[in-house]
Image (cartoon, rainbow, N blue to C red; front, side, top):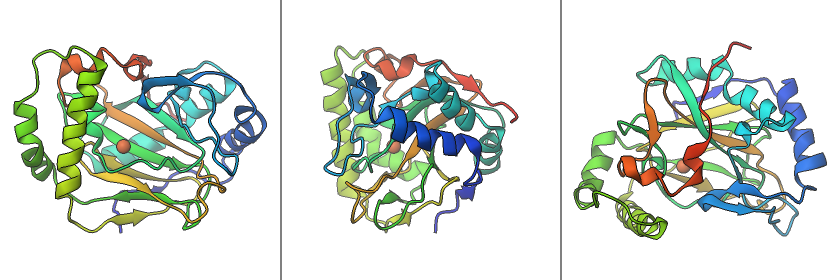
Length: 261
Ligand SMILES: [Fe+2]
């Protein structure tokens, strides 16, 4: 059982209801380009069951009604309370989100090679459920490792990093090596996690995690957002060093502090 799972929002929170309406009435019917996983600008790609396959990056940064709605949820002070209770800093800010309809089929990774604070090691990922998750639509699996174990594993790769990255391809290649080391060395049991609507689960940037498949995940929505936060006095980046951010648009979204709702 994961310790950082908490019921934060009521299932009948108006913002969650409105976001669900937005998903069905607008988002699925739109023919618009959004930033997606892998820093691609794409239109919706659908699963066999009509769910949006390619999650949307940083919708919370859009000044549209749905963007503001998502922002309001992700910057609700109840989440900051959860963060300050479970992690060592009091004040936090939102730096990135990824909105999912279909289960994203994300393979095993730690966030720190894609997203982290600078200094590294303090970014927290939070999955917020907008629909119930269960064996049919899937959830998330986390692995209980401490920071030292993961940094020891990654140490030879960190020591071999270039001083300056020259292209996106070079970063992808190096990330691949981190992912391979992680895959070959993650032996602890999975902590399989499902959420009810309005529940959240959080994890630190060194925690290995992956999506947990569902039996009908191509047909039943796992509508949720993965929101990423860093301590309010830190910079956004990755654990690969300060110049690892210049090739990716995901680092260009505005930062948002928490508000009392
Ligand atoms: Fe992640």
